[in-house]
Image (tube, rainbow, N blue to C red; front, side, top):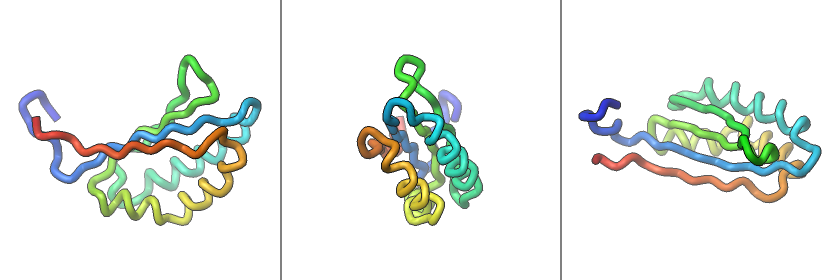
Amino acid sequence: MTATSPPESGRLRVVAEATVLDGRADDLLPLMADLASATRAEVGNISYVVHRDTTEPTRFVFIEEWANQAAFDGHLRSSHFARYLTASEPLLLEPPRILVAAPLPL
């Protein structure tokens, strides 16, 4: 997108935040790596990047871009996402927070 072009119609950005229990980050990292690899192969996934908070090392942020709502919905129903949720649940301080946003045509 340039300064003069509108955002792609239908695209979504997703920002998810997960905070791992103290001392459990090393257990979560391979789960996130597997999830990222499988997610990047999904139809409709444009970008999927996992970040670690620079001030709070137990906080991880997932920044995703999807072609449309249907692609994101497919991700939420995928077996690899279900496996990640089940495996990560005992490692997390609280359930992940997920924000789904659509670009404005400004």
